[in-house]
Length: 231
Ligand SMILES: Nc1ncnc2c1ncn2[C@@H]1O[C@H](COP(=O)(O)OP(=O)(O)OP(=O)(O)O)[C@@H](O)[C@H]1O
Ligand SMILES: [Mg+2]
Image 1 (tube, rainbow, N blue to C red):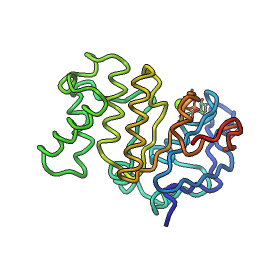
Image 2: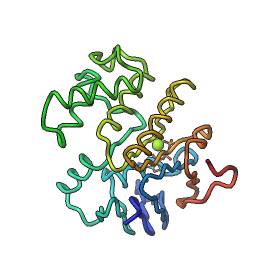
Image 3: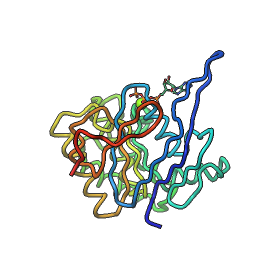
């Protein structure tokens, strides 16, 4: 099977008080292996909600969600945990680094489920911290790093797993242009070298040039981006 992500007629609503807020409405998308796709859309349009559903953090109310051949709507909690740990690299909008662990330890922790040897985890963490330009922060704690440096630790953590699917929520929001370029080039490299599928949500239209495709999330549905088709 060639598609890694297959969402069909997915809906997700939130209820607060007596109101129902339909965030995703009959949304469908297919993403092929090795594809890098960006979803843009205004604040509150449901981008994080969509990523959380694909990452097994949130669940759709209706429709089907297939990732790498697994039907996420049918998985129980422990299978969902296993799926999330082994198949997905998540770059969260607000990094989610553990404050009591160093940069390297944050990455090693995320490798524990699929690497057995401490030394290998350690060298993999170091390798990816170097790739994002943080050689000198390997043993630093999050509070000792700038926002952009913490963001790069979060990027390194997701990429170090070399997962089937990377889900990235505004992954360059805190980076200057040079860092943004190196992070995006690193993702392009992984896409080609390992065959990783990458879904990015962002407000930043400058990222389009790294993409195979850009889509717009509007009124709960995805539309193709008519302004510019990527490369
Ligand atoms: N757990 C929740 N409970 C209730 N409403 C929620 C919840 N999570 C999200 N929402 C609502 O769903 C809508 C979409 O939120 P979401 O976080 O997916 O937006 P977004 O596109 O990621 O926005 P941003 O660009 O600001 O990050 C918003 O109106 C938000 O208030
Ligand atoms: Mg968001």
